[in-house]
Picture 1 (tube, rainbow, N blue to C red):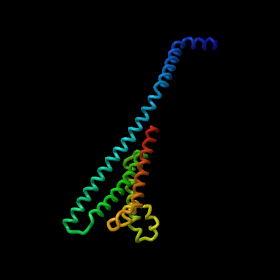
Picture 2 (tube, rainbow, N blue to C red):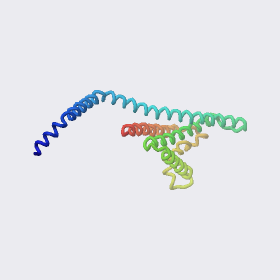
Picture 3 (cartoon, helix red, strand yellow):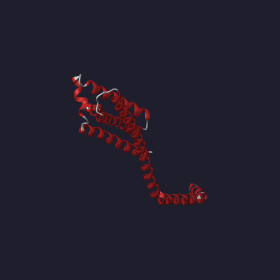
Picture 4 (cartoon, rainbow, N blue to C red):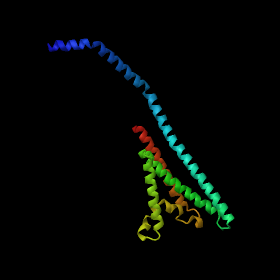
Length: 198
């Protein structure tokens, strides 16, 4: 009785079973055929997202540079108007160092944002980090316990050499530039990993 019921069920479903088998075989062949194209398209899409990060960062960097240029023009013009004896070149060095400092914190925020996908979190952490490292650098000359930690503050590399008097310190420029490169690279890597995970 059970054997006949089993055979009857298979016989009744033979057409639908044949249809599903043909459909699944065709689907698997189709997927195997288009996979190389899908893979290349995925690579081009990653490329696109990386390009978005690079172009947005370039736009922010240009905007920050324009602000720095306007700031320098205003200060240099003001020193002439008010007869303040300050070298225009030294002002340019200070403002360029400030530009690098701003870029360092921008790339930190960018890296956190690309990793987490949360803008408020990235702004909050990078802003908090800016406040803490500023306070460490500001109070280190007066608080002995903070002095060893001053080298961990980007603000130290911004003006630790008293740029307006002594000019830019090449090693400090390297540190700030290295921070920018490090966190920008981390942002690109994190964003591509998030894309692959999605």
